[in-house]
Length: 197
Image 1 (cartoon, rainbow, N blue to C red):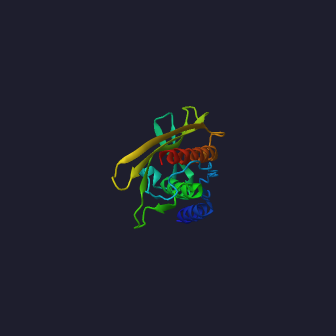
Image 2 (cartoon, rainbow, N blue to C red; image 1 turned 90 degrees about the vertical axis):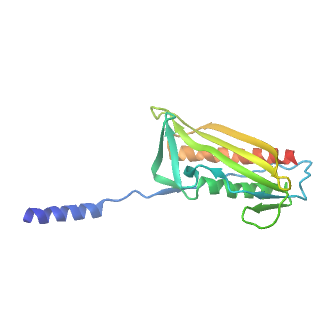
Image 3 (tube, one colour; image 1 turned 30 degrees about the horizontal axis):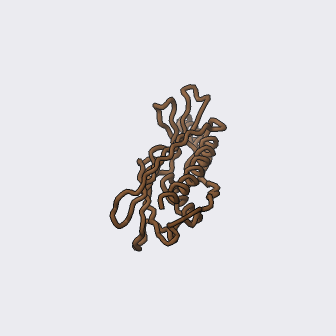
C-alpha cells in the first residue's frame, strides 16, 4: 500500500514539474518599399481584393515544412500569429493602398461596387529541407488574377514563383526567407498591376 502512495506522489509531482516549452509566434512583416507609379491610368478607378484561395494549411496557424519533397510536418513549438492566407490579404491591401495606383482599394466585405477585382491563389508557401536536414530553402508560388468587374472577364493573370535559400536550417531561417519572398512578390505585383491599367 505504501508503494502505491509513493508511486502516486512521484507521478503527481513529476507531472507538475514538467514544463511545456513556450510557443513561439511568428509574423511576416514585409518592408513594403513600394516602387513609385509612372504613367498611371487607374488613379480614378477602384479595386476590390478577394480573400485568397488556398489549401487548408494556409488558413490555420501551423508553420509547415517539407523534408525530401515527401514528408510534410509542422514545427512543434512555433506557429504563425495570423494565418498565411490572412497575412497575404492584409499585406496586399496595405501595398496597393500605399502604392496609390488606384483611387480606392476595398476589402472583400464591402458592399461598394469596384471597377476591378483582384483574386489571389496561394499554391505554395513553405520551407523545404534536404533528406539529411543540412540544407533548406523556401518556395513561394502565388498567382494573381485581375478581373474586370463589369464583364467579369480576366484582364491579366500573373504567377510569381520564388525559391530562396534559408540562412539557417530552422524555423527562424524559414520565416526570414518567406518574409523576403512576400516582400518581393508584393513589389512585383504593384509593377505588374500598374502595367495592366
